Image (cartoon, rainbow, N blue to C red; front, side, top):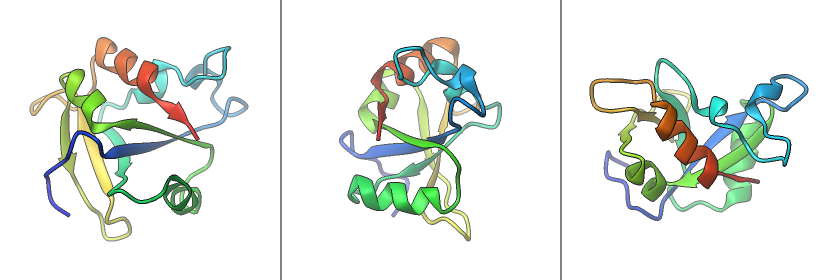
Length: 120
């Protein structure tokens, strides 16, 4: 893998459940824009065209909560910058940034991603 992302690749994020962090969830069960706010950049796992259940099982070994995904296209449409950032423990780790210079996604960017996110 490299820093090349096709628009139809999925990006996955673990989101704390409502009983831990209710501000991350809307009343209709969808994820809120607050779940996409991180001053260090939004940490996600790139899908690399793996099946949803394979990605979710891998992420649930490391994280608590629900797994949501959105497409690279949605991040691009929001004007976000995607940076492949593998770690020793996670070859799929990626950051979604507000821009090349600003890690935090703007309120508008977070809102766009929240509207497009699908809860697994």
